[in-house]
Image (cartoon, rainbow, N blue to C red; front, side, top):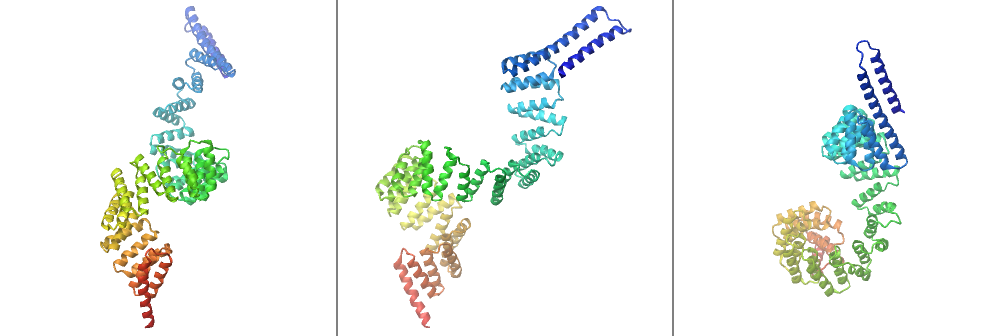
Length: 582
């Protein structure tokens, strides 16, 4: 009805104008002038009347779902009255619904030019620019909106988002700070400011604004989700867990939160907790790979092989060509000691496929377990032939020869691997071990030094080198340094702890040696070699009875050189008896 009123008002104004001119005594218009004025007024009124008619007709057709005809009528209306901003707003909206973005932009631009004070029009145009990736134009429109009305929350939020998309985080922060200052109790404003601080890695500020948003609205799920993520970034796992749980109190069906909580448990090696969370969000009818495979792998990690096999078989029934799931199923059977089924699954994986290499390596290990060593070796030789650039084939075959004490063949395979894949530290490490077993201590030292050059934090190589130098009684200060470096990387490792004690023993620092070897035994109480080291240290300190007890225990634990140990035990007994007789 507003449009009808407008037309009536225009008509009255025209009539008043004509009447006024007729009564004016200052200047009497000629008949021709009066006629021309009347025609112009009629034409203007007619155009607006026509425009309004076609506008209403468009609405009627749209209600009848005659979309093309409705659009045509609206276009006629805009053409009839090109100065009516509202018609171009309607036209832009129509084009937008039809996915005609270019036409929508043109119509919105016309509307804005006709009525630059219209916030609605500028917001529409900014949104169109943004959807078309014309970010700078969108930013200009949102800024114009804020010039017209600084309290426009949506414009400020979208402007900050666009700045952030261009990595203009400081400008985004400034925009959001103004919003928070205008409305300090607005939870959404505080939330987005927190997100911006998070992007800037200002974690303390981010936490402050997330907490402020949550103080205003405790059930704001997006703030809880982000705050938990922030805690994860800071390795504050207990806080992250508590925040996810709080979110789940508000929304127990939130799959994203439960999945993230499960992933958090995974990172903490809390497999039971992770499994519980994933099972809660896994639809029994769902055949999706990711969640079900996670559940299957967790069962595998928890040594629940029957459950793992059931999950993987279910997945394979829905997707028989999935080689990843078949590989996992083979591992589950292998861990369950169902070697025939494991072999069947691994053999069903093509050698050239993405899981072919891993499947063949497991096949070789199963054949070795069954005692089919020759077949295992043939399988590994095929792996090397098909994947000459992969180090695993050389490592597995080298290890197999090493286990069989065929050291020369092990050395040859490992050196072949280093020719094909130079710079692989695991190959250098295994070669060093093999050379040591062959009696080439110096060659072993060279290989361990190569490993450390490739990776200065290779704890096993640092320990092996330090222990070897101590055993040889050379470069003892360096040996101490190597072992200490290894211990910094693995402070709870019992073998490295023993190595440091043994270095001190070789340096004649027997009291320190005793302290470290005892620590090693606290961590590995059943190790016969460390127990022997304890006996040697007691001998060096003249504590013969303690030495005797240590050697006897080492024998009970199954020391690999009992004859050598018997000799030490005999000496300790004799001296302990002499000491007791005195």
